[in-house]
Length: 243
Ligand SMILES: Nc1nc2c(ncn2[C@@H]2O[C@H](COP(=O)(O)OP(=O)(O)O)[C@@H](O)[C@H]2O)c(=O)[nH]1
Ligand SMILES: [Mg+2]
Image 1 (cartoon, protein in one colour):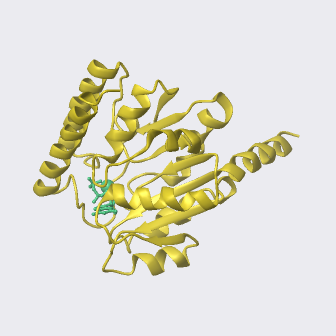
Image 2 (cartoon, rainbow, N blue to C red):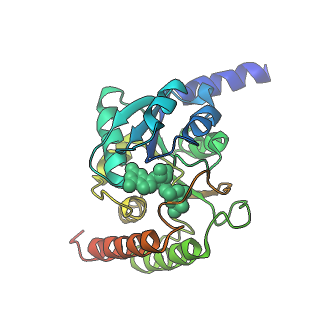
């Protein structure tokens, strides 16, 4: 009986969930990421290859993902490409996940449950309150998330502890946000707009480990500076918008 019910719940969640993974040169990790996503819970896994010059797209396809290509560089540009594709599938829930195997894709279920069962609109996976492998989340990331979180609390009265990539949102709510950022302002833009619109938001702890391959963002000085500037610009641009 319990199993029957569980199958039923899984089938319900599966019918409605798709995963979008932006990926730039992740041939070493992408198959593991796709492979660890609970297939009984998702309808489609979409890897958006952002002009990689390695075998990311082939590896992702072989692992069972739908592969899209986005030639404009940028994390947000890749996510926007994935969203555009969803016009064809009209899912209920969209999960975003990075391609570097830092997140634990098997934790997807706990991200979509608050939406499916408790009618939340947006679920943010927080690595700060989750279990982290030592050194997986660089100190500059933690500081950046703390500053951004404090500003968002001050301006829009919702306390986020992280700007993590692993998150789930109702498709209809995602469309309402009219996402714009093409770079690394993407994650914070979604969080700010969700808070501004008074979405039902919840943070849940997610685990985090050291990525496979080299970091292109917070693991490099240039990446960290660029991401920090873009995140701050995004916060203040949202603040000075009329609504
Ligand atoms: N689409 C896109 N994704 C990128 C780009 N640079 C990094 N990524 C992806 O963004 C995610 C985070 O990058 P990562 O190098 O892990 O940065 P870190 O988590 O700060 O160390 C990974 O899934 C990368 O594949 C880029 O220029 N375009
Ligand atoms: Mg990473």
